[in-house]
Length: 148
Length: 148
Length: 148
Length: 148
Image (tube, rainbow over all chains, first blue to last red):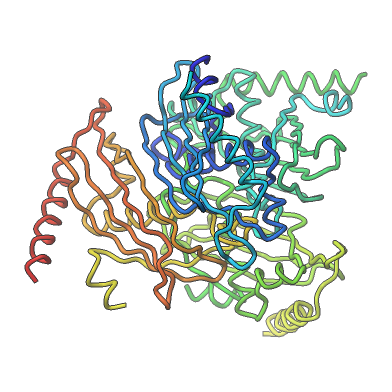
């Protein structure tokens, strides 16, 4: 687990629920996006950004691109950990790097890059100040990490 | 929490995930059945019955009737506990009584009765020996509880 | 099909999608509530009530009780029809009777009674005028049907 | 619609169901993968490959990578069309190009590339003969199209 905790800004453990498995007896492809969204929202809450609260205020955090590499499937009974890093991708876009590992053997399950933006009340991309501060902090952390 | 732990054979805590909420901003009705199924399977695993393993062996635990009273909705960020009791309903049927409470104020969310049976490989109702033993144990516990 | 069309105020045909099936190879229990909700909303739209529009205006149509009898499961590739009747259950509650039949053999799949109410902006039960008119119309239809 | 029908090997029309919308009032990101999977399976059935039947025979068609560009969201009441093309990506991989357009204005919603493979009973990548024939046919069609 040490590698996981030092490689990611945030990690979150979860378990497969049987209703998430499809007729192949494995977690359905679309469900991993549910897992990833849940962990993004948990991370954002941790750094002071409440997705539901943003939504109620008319600030919509939206995904503009998702890339998912499916390495090996999760099955009923599996426990897993999701590691997350957040970087600023461009002026108006941010990127979540999210990797899922089966526990306890840490076999890679999914490696994903989820690019998002924030839309203001007029539907225009605009990163809110609070979110920009979080991204700024992450950029700094990134630099520090590179210096180590 | 004391009331919860003495009233139910099994309790399980969970949290709402944002993707489970619909356009009304509350957990969608169908999702509570997901929660209830997950807790039933967790309970069964605890008493030695693995749903996925049963399925692979051709023994299908199926729901034949569900009654759900929706008392108050869960929202984004809510944590909740599900209490479960299992009784034998008839020779070939068993009943899960499952109640969901919002934490920490223990406001009732859903009260449910889920009646199930087990189908053997020929699709005929037949309670497997292992499952019957669990039900027998629960009936005894019920009697003990009534004597207290 | 004739029986279906004369017994219900509204019928709606759908098909099973593979992602709706679970590890038992059959449609997961919770998915039938998705089907039933979709057909209720389609019916309401047909009689002039748009669920999403109501929601945006702060009028929340909510389910207070669901009873579902699972008669036989749907599988991958199955086509089915959902029949719906709507009655006024009490001053503040209405009831959808919704039955699912596999096509083309019309084998019963699910028989359900879904009781709902409408909550106004202060969260109090209150049947909006437009909805009350629909219910009134259905009561009349019921009487006519009984006279035939 | 003409453009759609000449640009894709297969097109499939669907409608948003209200339970697929999240608290932002739009279709949740993960649901588009459900739509895309459903259309892939419908297409495969059309060309003689039944996903459920393959699964029962131990041949698992699996997704190894998904790329989704979210162009604009679908909302309650929206009807849409999914266009699909299938190409052989490499010896052991095939790629579905799937694009979603809102109807009737044909506004782009999602552009996706879904790469898959087939796993035999020992979990090894192996394109079954029937599937290879379909891919072969598509390559030929591609060439013809380029000559037009």
